[in-house]
Length: 205
Image 1 (cartoon, rainbow, N blue to C red):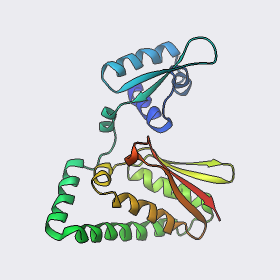
Image 2 (cartoon, rainbow, N blue to C red):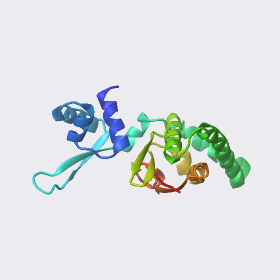
Image 3 (cartoon, rainbow, N blue to C red):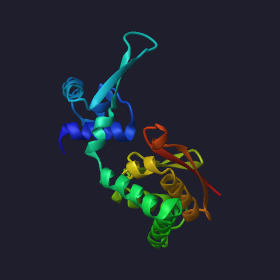
């Protein structure tokens, strides 16, 4: 994988990073990373923000721009929005609701099957994250104290979710139903509301 793409993936999954932190992740020199960042800045893929440090010079953090969305799966955004508009025009809002419910039920069946042989919150979450990664969500699981985070760093259905927020309602309800016997789930960060990622807090019962 090219260094440029690796840098973009690190910023996507970890959020704002310094050149030093990127250099450590990539096992290259800080100077080498700075050269890559200048090139990515010129191409419009990244921007920086200098944050005041306790002492000395400000610390420079790099973040991605909206332009980098094209580097990740988009599920044919334009077609998706057109199809949603068509469903509403032909079948009305009730028709769209039936479509979302059908998608939810279909996902539930396949996810339940995949999680059937997994036990405990962590096992189930790790399998769920694996499935979501295959679907383009760049999902990871992190443990914090006595609870977990299911983090989704990309939304391949962002266009559909922006057009109709019920697609996001569907995602949250799906997770809650899948793990209702073992955990309570809430969404704490939401891409549609401007967050960098979708973050689901998972508290074991």
